[in-house]
Length: 564
Image 1: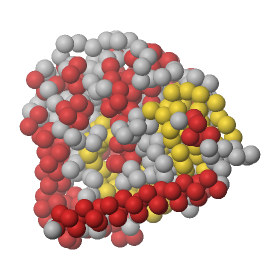
Image 2: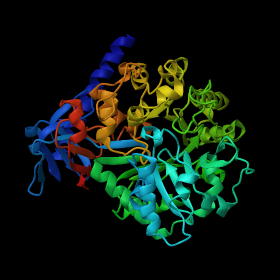
Image 3: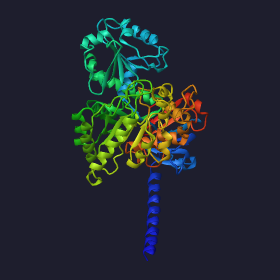
């Protein structure tokens, strides 16, 4: 009897649904599409219909995705027919972990990205010093020493040779270390007796003399040397970042460690049409005032809906390259276990408050100890705040980087519902030094994208720019090839952790949308979702994987509007 009633109601429901579809179709027929995209392969990231021939868009929303004939039924006198000309279209690529302000600042300061040696760094520094007034601070960012022939960090003596009078601050690409010169030390009174703050380290030579290298929280010792940017400089930095990312083909970014005061600036630029990029903000969680302010006030967004702020960003440990990542056992190449950057007494009340308020928590964790403690603290917060006391039952908290994970902890991500937010380019850069830092055994569970995905865990893919270049082609390539850009890898780098191209596509489209609570409107090409598209000159799903690095960005489309 019960089954008979259920069957009758099912039949009624199907009939009602059919009538609604017909009605919707009639409504759609009454107003033509603003644009129809066709003329190239179109991938949807929708398993129910992985590829289509054409997509129709009206008012920034996808109203049809299917055959060209079906799309042309939505054509009107004013419909723009956009011919892809054989190019390949995908859902809009989203960088699930980047630093938007830093991306813009990289283009506007001394850019040390790609520096090949200490000598090369000094040549670039000397040129900048020559054009800088005597005594003014020189700042640069982007160096990585792991490929350098000198085989060491730069030091104060290196910098003093070309800048004896101007204080110099040169930030490592990962943002977790700086090298400064003697003039900078004198300006802030840093001596051999200066104590490092919690979560930081002042590197010293065999005689106890500071080398000029400041790790993680110790960077704060010279923070007063850099003048705060003006409002116009902040705005231009964000505009620059938006242009750079649209040119690369990104339609969105999850921007990390955002200063709360900059959120209204980002919103204003977006509403004025000066950004051309979706931004999902995680504000700096090391400021209790701003963190608890967001927790108290709740999520916010810009008037156009392109800028959403609903997360805080915390840090467990430092970075692997500067030996700040917190490890369960000492580094293989140093007598250190890295640095924890946050104390549990600080973090737990914030976690519980965020859980009650429905605020997402996205926490940097790189070393196996950092990741294990993150899981422990998240789990403790989940146990302390029952689902009935939470604003949203599924918090979707994230582990940003998730680089070195003890294999025993991988399944805990699935069991706790934690999203690993991972950057494939880190793996193809780190493979040149991580074996020395960690030894072979700890590479099991390192950059383990496929192990997570095989467990059904959503992996949100990003770049960590400006730590890395921030190019979606490099990130896609790295995820699939698990080799550096020259094709190099080695037998210890666990090729089995490479992902398929379908998985890689979702890592940069559908899964970042899920990680930002936006999978109902972004991340795939489906009717009812927003028309964000990335168009490459060639099909990255079929061409030789090395060729992905050389495809051109033909078009970047944000809500139906071509922004590149």
